[in-house]
Image 1 (cartoon, rainbow, N blue to C red):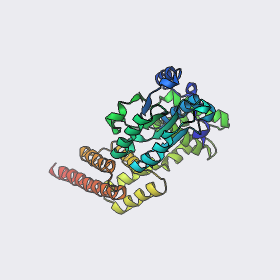
Image 2 (image 1 turned 30 degrees about the vertical axis):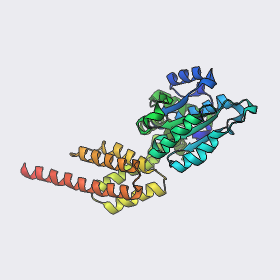
Image 3 (image 1 turned 120 degrees about the horizontal axis):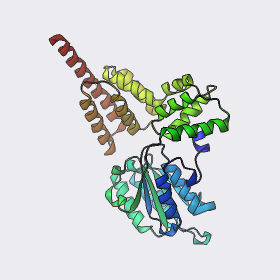
Image 4 (image 1 turned 135 degrees about the horizontal axis):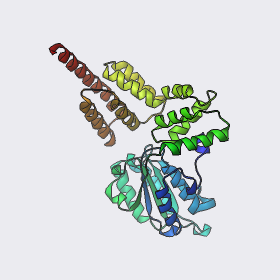
Length: 325
C-alpha cells in the first residue's frame, strides 16, 4: 500500500503541521521529561505518523519491541485496558537504555467510559516507565481527567498545495502518468485527508493512468459515495435497498458504524432538504446511542427507517405547498 510505503519516518518529513512539529522537536530534546500526548484532528492529517515518528526517535532500534499500537475502536472495552495495556505498561528493561515504553491508542475517543477511567489509573501508576500517545478525531470524546494529564496537539486539514505536491512526488517516484486536473480532483474528494488521497491515487493508477476519468470511476466506487446512495434511498422510502447498501458498507467495505453516520451527515448537507434540521437531529441521536453502547446494526437500521419517515414528510409538505399555491 502506498499509504505505508510513503509514510514519513521522521518528523521533518511530515506534510505541513509545522507548528506541531516544532513543539514536538522541543520535547524530544529532553525525552525523559515528555508528558503523555493527545493528538486530535481530522483523519489523514498525520496523527498516527507523528506518533510512530516519536517512537522511532526515542526508542531507536528497539522501537518495535517497546511500542504497543492498538486501535481503540476495535479493542475499546475495559478488558483490553486491564489485560493488554496494563501488562505492557508494567515492565521496562533498563539494560537497553530505553527511557520508557510507548503505548499508542488510535481512535481513543471510541473507548467506553469505563475503559477510559481504567486507562487514567494506569497512566498515573506507570508514568515513570511508560508514555501514552492517544489519537482521536474529537478530543471531546476523551474524559477530562485524561485530557488534563496530556499535552494536547490539534491537527488541521491539509491544504490543496500540500496534498497535490505530495501526490506529484509519489507519481514521479512510481513513474505514473498523471494530469494536474486529476490531482486537483483527488484533493477535492479527499477533503484534506492525505491518506484517502493516496488511496484514490493508487487505485486510479491501477487503471493505467491518473486521469480525471479514472479518478471519477474510483470515487464512484468508494464507500463514501455508497453512503450517499444509501441516504438517498432511505429518504426516498426505499428501505430494503438502503438496508442492503448499509450491509454492503459494513460487511464488504468494512466501514465502521461511526463512519457511516459521519459520512451520512456530510451527504445530507449536500442535499437541498426543506427539513434538514430534522435529519441532523436524527443523525445526532443515533450517533449518541452508538457512543453509549447500543447495538450498531439495530440502531443504523432504525436510522434508515427514520430517514424514510422524514423524507416522506418532506415530500408531503412540498406537495401541499404546490397545491395551495
